[in-house]
Length: 283
Image (cartoon, one colour):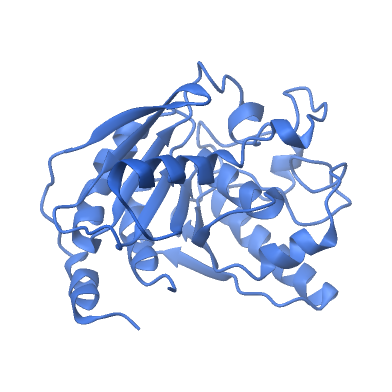
C-alpha cells in the first residue's frame, strides 16, 4: 500500500520541472574503472526506494541519468546509472549478452558472466549513500534491456524487487530449442532458474510507437529477425513466449506486459511510466 507522500509523487510525475543534473560519480575497484553515476533526490532518505538504470548501445550513462533525474526527484527514487564503457565491455557480447558467450558464440564459463555486477554495484552505492533498503528496481532500456532480461533468466542471485525491461532490440527467449543469445539452447540452466524467473515481478514495457523495421540500431542477426520485424513485435513475442512456456511447465507467472502510448525508441519517454512502476514496487 502506497502512503500519502507516494501517491502525491505518482501524480507529480505527470508534469515535471527541469532538474539540473546534480550528481556524484565514483569508480568501482572491480572491475577497475567502472563508473557509477548517482542522483540523490532532495527528499530521499536512506530507507527510500532506489532504481538502477542501464543505458543502451551508446554507453551514455550520463545522458540516462540526466533524462531520469526529473522522474527520480518526483518519485523520490535514488537513481543509479552504471556506465558499461567500451573500454571495459568492448563488444555486444560482453555487455548486452552478459559475457555468456564470445562475439563468435563460443561459451564463456559462468564465473565470467557479468550479471553479478548489479548486486555488487548496489552494495557499493549503499556503502556510499547509507541506503538501508536491501533491494532496488532494475530497469534497462534498449541494449540495457537486453542485459536486464538476461540477468533475470540466467543470474543465480539478484536483490531486484522489481524488474523492468524496456524496448529491447532482441531477446533470449525462454526456450531450449534456440541457441543463445536468442534462446537458452547450449546453456546449462536448471529448470528451477526458469521457475524463479517466471515468479519474479517483471514488467515488459514497450513503446507503442517503437515499430520501425528500419531503425538504425535494430539488431539484424537471423536470430533477432526471427523474433519479429521491429522492437514492439519482438517484445510482444518475448512476453507471449514466456507466458506460454510457464503455462506448459505449470509454473506461476508474475510478469506483466504494458505498452506506453505515443512513445517510440526513447529512454526519456519510457522513464515516466517506469518510475511509477518502481515507486509502487512491493516492500
